[in-house]
Every structure is written in C-alpha cells, then in structure tokens.
Image (cartoon, rainbow, N blue to C red; front, side):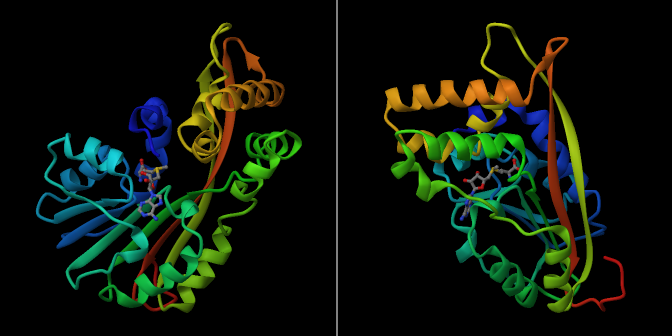
Length: 264
Ligand SMILES: C[S@@+](CC[C@H](N)C(=O)[O-])C[C@H]1O[C@@H](n2cnc3c(N)ncnc32)[C@H](O)[C@@H]1O
C-alpha cells in the first residue's frame, strides 16, 4: 500500500526530477496530457497549469494516492488504473511517467507499445531512479538476505529493475522516436537530528521499503528498520547536522514517429 503522507515527506527533493523532465518536453498546445503513475497528483496539477487548454488525466493503481489527488480539486481527471492496461486515445500528445516504471516489470515492452500507439509527434517522457546499486539499496538487500526474514524478503529484492539511459534511448530510437536521454545525480542534503531516525531510512520508507514493511509483522518490521538504520548511518554519516544523499536518476523524452536524427 502506498501512503501519500510518507511519500510526500521529501516532496521538494522528489519533485525536482519531474520538473527537470517536463522542462525538456517542448509541446506547444497539446490536446490531451496523461500522467501515468501520478501518485498524489500534486505534480500532475502542474501539467494542467502549464497546458490549461489540454485535457489532463492522471492514472495510478493506488486508491490511496488517487483519493489524495482527487482532494486537490485540480482540473485533472484522476482515475485508479494500472499503467499496463492504459491505451492512448488519438488526442494524447504528452505522456509523462515519473518515478513509476521501476515498479513495472517488463516496462520496456510497454514503452515500445506506447511509442507505436501514440499519434506521431506525441511526447513520451519518463524518469526512473538509477540508484539500485547505491549503498542504500545494497544495505537493504544485505539486511534482507542476512536475517531471519530472508525467505520472506528474498522474492521481493530487486537487483536491477531499470535499464540505463543508453538502453532506453536505443529501444525508443528503434521504435521510430527521436530521443533525448540523460542522467543526473542529485545530492540531496537531508536534515539529520541526533534523536531522529536516519533520514535515508525515512526517505526509503516512502518508496523502496514499502514491500518489506507489508511483508513483515510489526515486531519484524521494527527489528528490520533498526538494523537497516544502523547500516545507513554507516553509509551516510551526518555532517554538521545533515546527511548527503546522492541519488542518480535516468531521464528520457521521446518524440514518436520523428526521424531518428531529429531532436525531440
Ligand atoms: C514513486 S511514486 C511516483 C508518483 C508520481 N509520479 C510522482 O512523481 O510523484 C510511484 C507511483 O506509481 C504507482 N504505481 C506503481 N505501479 C503502478 C502500476 N502498475 N500502474 C499504475 N500505477 C502504479 C504507485 O501507486 C505510486 O503512486
């Protein structure tokens, strides 16, 4: 289950890649804009503000997220749904999928399918985290494997659920798109209180740790959390009251049906 409040705890840091992504979408007057895996909807609302004449929609598989999004009262049609079932209508000129495809196994096939189904000239923009080899995720996997919960947690461990920027670029260029692909490592400076939980732990609780939490009982989760917190404090020590948390992300903006040598 997704918890919008926990997810939004680092809302400023989490929203920056979205803004960096859509800044590279030069759509002028799109007819319809769709935000796939829209989460709590705050960022979808910025799409509606940027393109007020467009019909803007948000789709997410989490009813909790869609409830939160609907409460924004933004001019957006928010619906519960799985991105794997989504099909573009001919008026969709912009598709955004920010920080969602890492949760969708086989999303490479989806990207190719969307690229083929969208009207030529439409933009397909997505961002995925590229931090699965980072100390945070290595620590998560190590604690999960080395503890009494390994049988329960091993099936949940994801070593490499995303491709790198070159792979995505090649995939979408082969599907007939003009592609703009890049990666960025943000260095998030997270406040670290002496008596507070480690901030990388509380960051991960909003995303990567959700499946672990759901799989354990309350006591198991408390123990797991404590053990992971120790590892994270070693990997990301606090300096002058803050933790430096590097976070790599992969971005792609593809324009469908455009010649390969064109820029999106
Ligand atoms: C990390 S959040 C990103 C939310 C939003 N795009 C943002 O940038 O703030 C990931 C979202 O993807 C949604 N999600 C995961 N798998 C999905 C799927 N198969 N179909 C639709 N939504 C999905 C989750 O419910 C969650 O709201």
